[in-house]
Image (cartoon, rainbow, N blue to C red):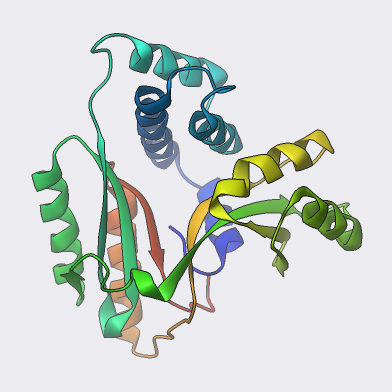
Length: 243
């Protein structure tokens, strides 16, 4: 799940169980399948596929799995048809939430997402009800260990980054959404490896929760959403100091 402290959520993902890792593989597999159907199986001519393969490798998806999914998606009728649907709503005490899904059954997914909002003190809203509170940006995370901050920042800005931040154990490099792949490739050519590199919804403002019930419900809602195979990403503006 993704809030404003991306690195903390990645650390949590690193400690996942085998079952949870399998869910991550499933979700990335869907993204690969959709990208192949939209732009073909060659990552050299399909930048979206290239980005997702990089994401898959960052999440330790085996190369054999990646190749198998690409071949299946490229075959005639060889893959399920998934559509991308984004839902918006409010968590406890008005936390803004955006839910990105890839689904082969929009009725099932809409019902699930609505249930999670309702069950934990939130409500699903209309498209556009919270997205104005977020900016879309490419975000590249690089582990700090052994690296010189000024050198990384110089290389990132030279590659076309628009912002450079530090967040816990990582450097966070921001790009325009369409520039993510180019900046990542440029930095990769300079020898950098990445914890993650993807386009995210970045909140323009954050909201703190002080009520213990609200905090518990927000965590439960995010856990339920993360466990749903149809849900790819959840973005929110909860400022959670405990992450």
